Image (tube, rainbow, N blue to C red; front, side, top):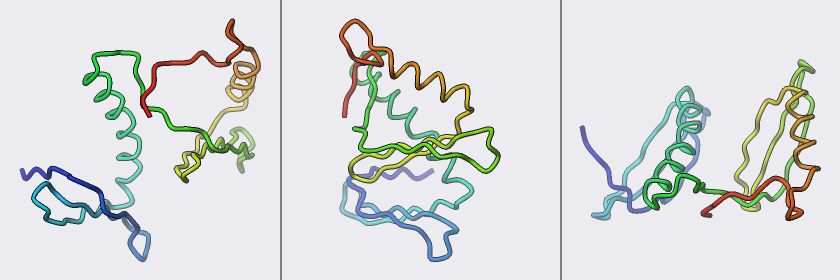
Length: 131
């Protein structure tokens, strides 16, 4: 198996037909390379990276409470076609966006959690974070 030591990510994009995403980078020797990930695998990669990032940070700094956090720029709650779920979209100021399908009872619970401050006046409770 060949290992690439990514020195920097130089660009990313999608194939013209939307069938894959493309990551371009440079290794430590200055050689450029492309990684093409078929659309069928992009979701799995997307779901895997946050947990890998959290595990790496906790291991590196020996702190099981640490997390990598992103600043929230905006959010939207939309109804879905099936009316059983809502779509909660969270966006950072620089454009990173993720959307979740949220059952109505969880959305109600989330709303209650955000409206009840803790002793410091902040809701929800802060966690150790790196960003």
